[in-house]
Every structure is written in structure tokens, then in C-alpha cells.
Image (cartoon, rainbow, N blue to C red; front, side):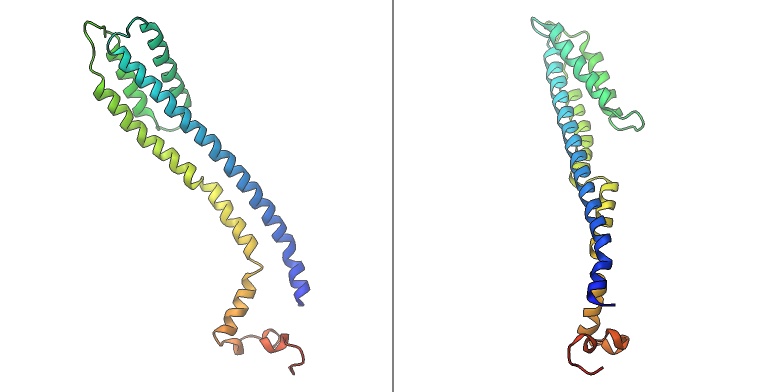
Length: 191
């Protein structure tokens, strides 16, 4: 097989691999962007919920209805973002429900201490937010698998050349068939 034939044999798989690789990279980037937006929205709603809770703990001032609305909207958005098929965020939602129950009777005359429940929500939320961030940072399993497959597809035509070079570098060329020994490729060398 000549070098030209060898190169032509590898062009189709290389083009296919590059196309697949490009699609995987674009898809992975888009998924990461959506997941990062999800994390940012979740953080924003947790912040709104906890700041409204702190204000409601002292009765809500002159506009308690606004703070209740802010608290409930944020809690609903957090709940709607949760995947119903797994138990992620269940602990946070349970803590939010408990916090809401403790805030119901709070007034300026009889404030409620919410520092512990707020801290518990922050701690539990950080655990899930960190898990989501790791997914963004390292990519999803399918994304990583396809990247590995793409890299193998791009590199597989090079592997025989690497093997050929290693055989000669390690002095094992005498183990190769006569047509693959280095002397067979050099011009004006008797075979």
C-alpha cells in the first residue's frame, strides 16, 4: 500500500470524526451555558427568598405582602426547577417549607429568629449548587464519551505510523515484514 493510498483511506474517517467532534463541542457548550444559567437563576431566587425571610422575621415592615409575594415566588421557582425524577433539592425544599411555617406568625412585636433555618438552607443549597457546577465544569458523561470517541477517530490513522516508528526506534524492525522495514521505503536501497 502506498502512502497516498494510506492517506486516502484515512480521509473519510477523519472528516467524519471532525464533523462529529464539532457537533459534540457545540452541543456540550450549549448544554453548559443552559446549566450555568440554571445555577445563576437558582442562586438569585435563593437570595431573594432568604432576604425576604429575614425581613418577614421582623413582621415585614410596612409592606409584608410584598415580602410574602417575593418569598413565595422565589420558593415556587426553586420548586419548579427541581427535577421530579430524582431527590435532589428535596432537603432544601423541606427546609424552605419549615422556614415559611415559622414566619407565619412573625410580627414586629414578636419577631422570629431565622438565622439557623436560613443558614441550614444556605448550607444545603451550596451542596447542590456545587454538584451542578461540577457538571458544568467537567461536562456530562455523554459529552466526555463522545469527545474521547472523536479523539480516537482523529488519531487512529496516526497509530500505525506511531507503531512503525516505535518498532524502528526500539530496534525491533527485524520483526516487521520485509515490505514494512525502513529500508523498503528508502530510495535506491536494494531490497
